[in-house]
Image (cartoon, rainbow, N blue to C red; front, side, top):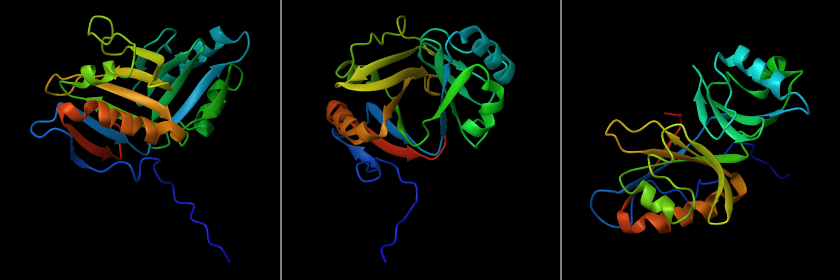
Length: 208
């Protein structure tokens, strides 16, 4: 009898090799896959955008993003993903579809994307330079400050990109959500694009 394993595994399990990659010396780019998060897409039902905004404020205590930005609640990040819709990114089972359903039962449809997307964090003094090879988004600090977000593409792959809080050393942090089926391909493209600057590769089991 054939035995099946239902253990959850990262789409980057084989592609991600922790350590140094590319040019020797201090790494100009750090690539980290974030694992074990909850991701729910909240989409307003027809004619319910205002009601969704009201429900989001009541549940999270902050206004949901209505433009390409990220709003930080006490225990979740609300990431704009299109008109009248946003992602809820969290950990610890606090904001799963089951937990959110009562709050948005009349205003929104919910879609669990926790295992459908891969989350990659990119930082370092060459992070912008590397990303400029893959995306047409202007990532200059004045055009894409902390909290800015975009639904865009990288190397012909659809992604959600946003800028997180800077690292303790002041260097920028960018986060990318990509569909799991395209994650390995994009990962290799990122490695190739960053190799000349030196890359530090890690994975983290928790959101920063």
